[in-house]
Image (cartoon, rainbow, N blue to C red; front, top):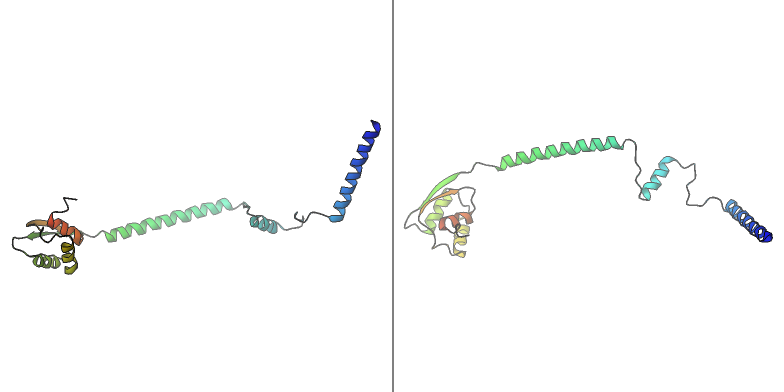
Length: 163
């Protein structure tokens, strides 16, 4: 038994000596950084490998960026409210009457005079395509300048209530 322990110890000692000699001959492994590498170079290597390096002034930068975001949001809100005020124009309502015996061109001419429609041809075409020329009703109608030609035609024919 004593011989076996001695042989085992001798084997361990021999293996340790061989590993030590190889380490001294080969030197440091190539992937380990040398101690004299500057901190900026180590940071660059870490960032290149996908790591994030926390800097001490990071909290100040985050606070500054949050303030800039707040300022930009305030500017955006101001611009949006200004744009909304510009687009909110006063709605003008016109009382429009269709009398018995009026033809489609007569009605279209009056709508053009009140500037409720932009194109005579488009309005007549819409009425014809939707078979609304015979459905125009006699009476008083409240029309606004914000209504589309289709909405006006539907209003004059009473088809907006059917939808």
